[in-house]
Amino acid sequence: MKIEILGMGCPKCKKLTGIVTETVKELGISAEIVKVDQISDIMNYGVMITPALAIDGKVVVAGRIPSKEEIKQWILEKQEK
Amino acid sequence: MITSFADWLVFRILGLSASTLFGSAVHFFVYDTIKIFFLLVTIIFIVSFIRTYFPPERTRAILSHKRTYIGNILAALLGIVTPFCTCSAIPLFLGFIEAGIPLGVTFSFLVSSPMINEVALVMLWGMFGWKIAVIYIFSGLVIAIISGIVIGMLKVETLVETIVHKTPACCAAVPGQTSFRERVDFAKSYTLDILKKIAIYVLIGIGLGAWIHGYVPADFLAQYAGKDKWFAVPLATLIGIPLYSNAAGVIPMVKALVEKGVGLGTALAFMMAVTGLSLPEFLILKKVMKVKLILIFASIVGVGIMFTGYLFNLVIK
Image (cartoon, rainbow over all chains, first blue to last red; front, side, top):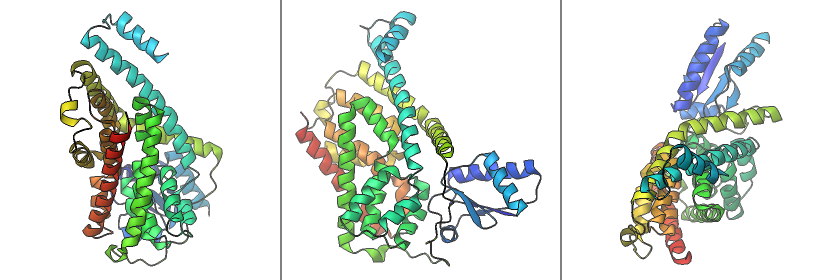
């Protein structure tokens, strides 16, 4: 699984990275956490407001920091598919 | 109600006297703190709830079919309800331009979105009353609309850096369908976020304001920055540019300064410069536009702000 954090290095993006890292650890899954900080890459996702989070290339949230519970749910949904 | 609570706390419990400078300063501080935090929580919650209905994708979709004038007016209005933060300025800007929204219309949005924000509004309302808050919104909208129209007429599209990427940003990738519960949750966490971020500045601002209120003689500043002083407005605008993140702390102090003789128009110009002309935002925008365009943008908005300042110095009282 590939989890991408979209944002150009704002404080919120860093916070989101921390939360995602912790969540992945808690779930005990193997996931690659990637920071996407180039504006051209971010634009490819059609995201206009950061921070945003994409799982396996699909944006799940933009413009806010989601809770751990939400992130867990998204990850689990992806795993079931 | 807040007054009686502040009376009770300061004069009864703390045993301070209303007639001493210290007592009146502490009373001022307690009263303003309670009032402002009450307003902050209520208004930010309401605004962030409304905002869940206007994600940038939706704003972009509304604006993409619009041309000059109508587009500028709508962009300025949508700027009030669409969430904006400096770090999102670039993706937002590019997203708008790519969707075919004219540059001038995009700029109307870029001016109004940070300038007319809920924190500034609450502080203005709490400190100066709703009339001034309404004047602020209205002037902000006019400045945003006119700046955008002027930039549109200048035909400066060549000053926008093009950023190449593979897929056009046409397809909103963000999931729609938000439930009522999710909107409330979003509003709650957003309100908490903002409060955490600004609480300290609000307290410092009110504290300094209370000190000025209690200790600086009335009309002391009129001789330096009264409304008959022509340089007060441009000076206030310039000082406001680097103070972006502290909008919450600046306004209580401005109120105290107005009490001591600073013209209200000057104060308005200052607050608009604090919110609307932001140095960090300019630095970030450098990645997507030439410095020349940022300077044009800042000058037009700056002129608009100063005009507003002079106008209200003339009109109010």
